[in-house]
Structure formats: C-alpha cells, structure tokens
Length: 253
Image (cartoon, rainbow, N blue to C red; front, side, top):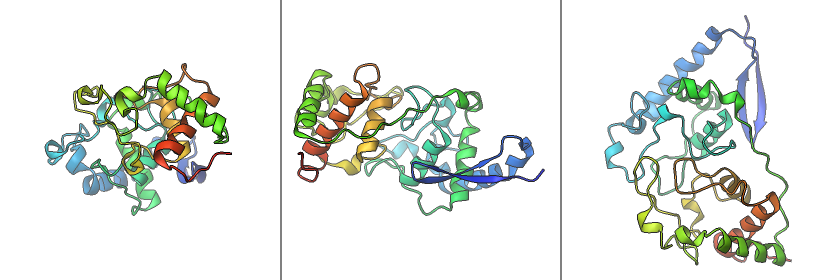
C-alpha cells in the first residue's frame, strides 16, 4: 500500500504522520532511519537500550533521560502522561537549556527528527501504546500584561510558594533549593529566572504557561492545574516575564 504523508503544523513545527490505515511494515523505514540517527547522535548519553546509561552519562551533572520509563518533562499533555510526537520533536529541535547536556539538534533534517521520535518511542512501547489517550492541554490566548495582571501574578507567586525553590528574587536560591532531587534521585538546581537560556522547555510566555499547566514530570516543578485558573496562570506568567525574565521589555499598560 502506498504511504500517504501529510504535514501538520504543530506549534510551528512540521510533523510528518502516516495515514492510519497503512500497515505496520510501512513504518519500518522510519525506524531504520531513526535507529541510525539515534546511534549517531544520541547513544553516547542515552545508551544502546535507552536507559540513560550511555558512556558519558556518568560525567554529566544533569543525567540523560531514561526513555524506558516513558516519563518526559516537556509535554503538552497532563503531568505523568506520555508526550505527543510533537513534544519529542520540539525537544530534539530546541534542546533542554544551556546548563543541560541535551543540545538542540535543529541541524537534523525533518525526516530524521521524525524518525528518531518514532525510534525513541520503541523503548517504552506499552506507555506509548496509550499515547492516543493523552489529552493535549489547550493554551488560551494570553491575558494582557497590564499592571493589574502583573500584580495578581505576584500574589500567586507568593501564594503557591514559588519562592521556596526559585527564591523570592527569582535567583534559584530558595530555602528548599539545596535539598531538591528528582524522582530518579538526582539533584535539581532551580533555574535563575533572570537567565531564561537555562529554562527547560523554553522561556517564551507560551512555554512558561505550558510548564506551569503541565509541570515537569519527575522533577520538583509541580503543575498548577487544579490550583490556578487559566487567567490566573497567565497572570503568573506575566509577573515572571515582566519582573524576572524580560524586565522592562513588556511594558505594562
């Protein structure tokens, strides 16, 4: 059967997907290419079996992801759920921040990135078999960064105790910061909010909203879903953006 490919714009990225009725054999060339790319670019950190035990893993401060447990930090899906293909693609394309060993692989061709996404999913087949059940969060239009919105965001920054980890001045020096570890037992260093290049998953307002609504699975960064409304989440984003990340750039009205 001829494979039909359509390009879908997902968060500004082109994502290739095969039509559902194609037989499994039609996917094999993608996995072959995906394995080739993985062995060339990923294996030294993530390991042959995808367990995050590559030959350089022991020397890295931030440990490589163990793909076999199906837990990924950056997602458009609720906390604890497997990511979408577009989430994996975005991480490959953009990397995970400048203090992280996961670089941006934007130089790879689109088909290579799509192929390695497919190959990564083979390390946790049971988890990704339920991928179609993961509900993608909806990001509503941003609330205007007014004086009132920023003031509300500051209230929420205090109320939900963001400063315990990030520090009251956003420098990553909160009282809990020295004791933080992730679910795998590795030390976590909260980012200095004035250094957006350190952020996992990006520092644009939409990235901040996504991180707040989904949390970073396996880390100390919780989700605000069920705690803050959509508008309150945008207020918090506006506060973080105006006071820490881009002070003076987004002038409130």
